[in-house]
Image (cartoon, rainbow, N blue to C red; front, side):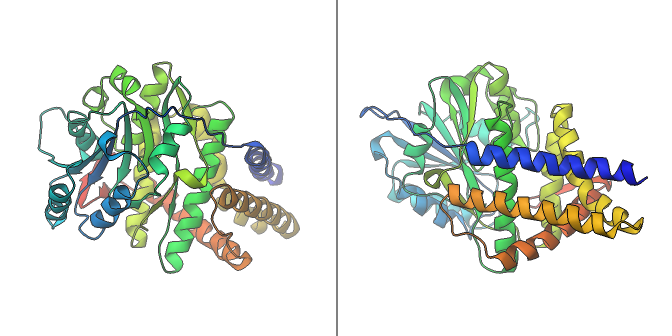
Length: 367
């Protein structure tokens, strides 16, 4: 029994060491662009975002990119608040911002995928940059996303962190940074991972080779579907950790909505290859096996393994924060985050198995 429990726990530690080595090794390299910059279209999906849409559009208006080559498309997904009214006001004041009201159709698309499938009909750029209404980007974001593309790269993703007040805000910030960093590591090792749907860029040619969202089978995690379809067409991919492509998202308010978010992510990942789910299993089982190890009278092993895991994890998070140019969390925050990670991981695993529909943006989805 002791050996059976010990094997996956030690496997977890070995994977952590491997990931730490890649984090240390990885360096982002910008390319020099010609003075003749391409036209770009930025897609912003929004539903009931009256508290956030103005902040998002204001950040996009600060982009260090020629306005004549910049198009901003706001997809209003049948909002019932003042989202459309606010976006329309921006559109009237800034001609390169266009409001697109999303309508029902018969193609079986839902959620953000339906928004994207209608925005692409209005896009005029050679590159499509995708973000969300609750995200803020830096002035150099658009130009830098282009600078990290090779000529054969079809899709790329920047790094997004939660930037909000309160204890739950910085805990979600650490959580996003940690797991985005680890997902990126897999990409650096030569295996396509996924893009972040609120901070990604796709080449026009690559996008339309997939047929666009209208021809991609619906998934509640539309970012992964597009990423995987582009890669399947033979295009390269890239995941970038760099200050210039760091975007800031608002926190998810409430623990139950947070569980729905995680269930949506896991449900969308059902199509991932088996080795991904093996990795998820090793990670997810850690917090279930550690108490079991302690219970079978191996407290010293439990303390030793958990301590090594936490030390490596702390180093990983610190490196990720350095790579995106953010102030490092305090040691006390790392300790609190470990408790948070324990509770969230166990709760997510249980919630994922419950036969309840996933709720997102006031809508329910069977996934």
